[in-house]
Image (tube, rainbow, N blue to C red):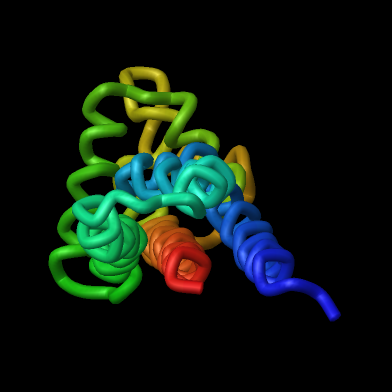
Length: 193
């Protein structure tokens, strides 16, 4: 019969691997599509299982012979504080995962910033990946950016796309935030197990 530490290690690895994959997927979506989601959410979720595993591996041998009364009393509180980072990440990611007027405003503002800074790489990547043009409509802040030689309909004429990006882009933000939320929950389960 396997020992309790080996079962805990197996359970932690079983939870850590999906959490890492989900966080890495969210991080990839976030950077590929220039989503208005803080990059720190998936990044911290990638680091959290690694740091938790290292802390567990280092602390168990050190704590086994612990005879200091003060440390024995402090340890439960320290263990409690390790559950907080995944919960904070879960709550923050749920703010972005639930569609709202605030999220729509943030997405619109982020796209506007990309357009005003003429961030061709980001806008083009979004339009290519989602196969769409513009934000609210096919002609609204689309790439190629309007100029003397380029009108607002150039994207739809040259690319052949028939949809605006705004709704799909916001959906991608919800998906990425949901991936981060699930990873945060798995990280929390790993810490409490």
